[in-house]
Length: 453
Image (cartoon, rainbow, N blue to C red; front, side):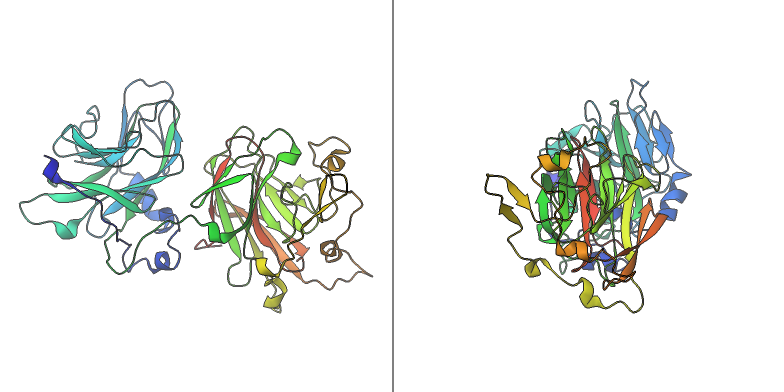
């Protein structure tokens, strides 16, 4: 039996039908196909003891038996791959995925039959016919786990490799005979709170010329304060006790006429979902949410308010929750000069902080207002003078109704739908994509180069 298990292969990529992935190899696999193909597939699925909400699958709270979902369309040479994104591991982390026959019994443990293969995220093992092999130590929240069939290696009368991936890297495979009606994508779970997002009708092939990889993405970020970076995922690591504990992630490159939009997906809202997406000037204070200071604008998930250079927000859009995608972009005017927002990290002076002579480090930042949650005088407690001014402030000030800085239209989206837009003055050096977090366990997936916007 162990001869059926194959070692993982290193080189792989998606086919020529998806050239964008080769330009942006860290793109989430969910963006490879339009959502309409997933919706059509969902209308013909089988599911027992599984809540199905579009492409979101979760385990019901009142169930005690294992639930199973079987997709309506089999894997084919054209669509030979599917994957899930782990949104919640629940109490016991019993999630598994794989392939099985269309008429598979919904009461059978996945991977215990000869015509089904399953991968269990907690143990990191592939199971077939009740025998398995451990591939990795286990999977984490936010991981993309995929399963596919290498039809190009199928020989009549023989078994075909069924392979599994984690975040784009193949972790192992096992040979199995294709059932009469084909292999159907399967997801199963049995623990309260478990939830995944499934993406079907995808294409995945091995290519010796292109390596599919998910790197650390560190080169894309200029500053990470109280934020842990894991590939495209940002995780809050601050104290989360007061407004001075904001965690900030600021991208290295400003938005421009070529790259004018970015997105985040809320993987875990944490205790309070104090998550914000927005744009800031290069010298923005590292412990302030985007929008709280001049030279910045931010849309906040917890209350749906927009903040524009002030600690006082205004109603703007809906609140955002787990699984929601928040986007932010700029509509540049036709006569916009690109050099107005081309200042990079290397163009910024390093003496961002100064000592006040009393051991307190002061940021050369713009004027700071109190947030709606902060008590009077809170700004002074963090070593910043309320009366301070900076050159960045000048770009947002008017003289006789005029300003030397150009106007741009900043817009925000939620789940690919436009929420609203604001006309603001762009700071000197440009607007930089920024994410703020402020409560324990918050986690988001960032896409600085989405396909749409």
